[in-house]
Image 1: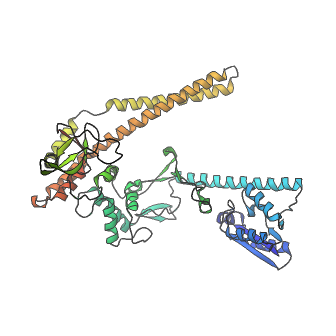
Image 2 (image 1 turned 180 degrees about the vertical axis):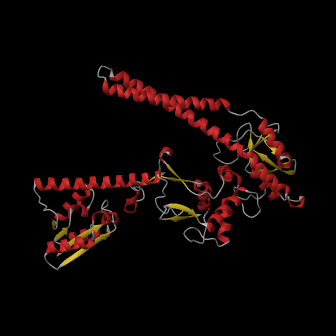
Length: 500
């Protein structure tokens, strides 16, 4: 029995005209008989061996059902030379392998020609992939969105190749940010938002009924909502074949260096201030909204010991036969890295101190803002140092280029000296980059503090809109979390409050 194998991938069919009908017609003519079995893989890459029709063909060849295999061209079997050689050797152990375009002979010359064609096919595949990737990157640099990325809050305009705001979904996005960044009694944290959206019957982008906390988190972290969409961010090379590989062999998606990302502007849904507020809350959400305890503490997740750095958690302790509630840095759990220095303060005392301070701020937000404005600009040295480091890095990179050019054009120069100097420059560059990253992280935190004035104003408006009867424990807790990042307590019970 004669077996005919045909394969086409979508891009090949459009580019090269390798239609399945053409392949099958040419192979039938070569077979010159109607007694054939056709094995057809449609829309599958030739890079991988695990294809349904090819797998059936190999099985039938091993079992002796197929004695002759006809294929239009070697690259229909595979686009990789190694796989071509594996398949041809496997088939020829039990059957005869025939190609329509060119004879295949088991001679040294025939094998050389066959391997050359396979190498060329593999090279062509790599070049096609490279050209397509380069084309997509260039398109992205022109401000085009390459495809519908299914971003919640947006629809995709195929003609303009741009995102456009989906009015209903955009309202849900705004609701998510409002629920997360503003004090409210409706929901608590990311998990609460996910449950609320599910209970309200709001569908996800894929029309699923169930919202998961990770989906909400991804929305809160996505800069597309402030008008910044990034393409060429993820390297997915090799992932196409993951479905054919075992779990430990699968290629993982990797994030490219930030300088390779391509920013494409798109319509904003959320303002920058609210987005940055959400990021600040996200960094601490695990501490701030940790599971519900048996006893509720007003400052749970916000208190830290100023002496040893341990978090201070609420607990009920017995003192001379009387139970008292306190915040303490003592860690009694097995395996705790730091047991704490024994700092403790009564919950009632600390709660009152913090709440009185917050009340003063909320009642006089403009005075607090004026005080902050009068302060001397912080971290002026760090900003100057960062400028110096950037200048020094540019000087090092320029010097390295000059040394490399000198090494290529001047034979009289001692190569070892040049290489030693290059190594020294590389070490200096790495040290400067580490220092630069630390300074940038520090200055990013200080820039974040510039949002405090507006956040305080909004929290103040919310607080002043409430009557004293509405100031329940939960409302106070939400108000405090809307402006406070951390509270540090010394052993003599002095406190420092750090705002978001």
